[in-house]
Image (cartoon, rainbow, N blue to C red; front, top):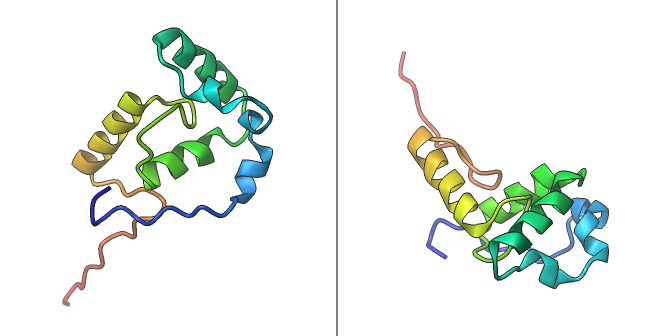
Length: 101
């Protein structure tokens, strides 16, 4: 975690109460192979809170497991692409600019 990464909010988020993975073994979302990642993605694909889950993992730079249907590698790619494109994650405020007229 770097200085720009927000401190994780460990309180239960409302969206977490609706997550499909809530009733499943956590091990399904921390697979050791590609087959396990694909299985986790299938569960995430049918989950109504998949976007919120992915944003949570991106915002707090969660390094392990499948979150929001994305593996660790996929999340790193998303973050890299967002940095290049100048897109913020949910918890990162946009930079303030002062226009002079």
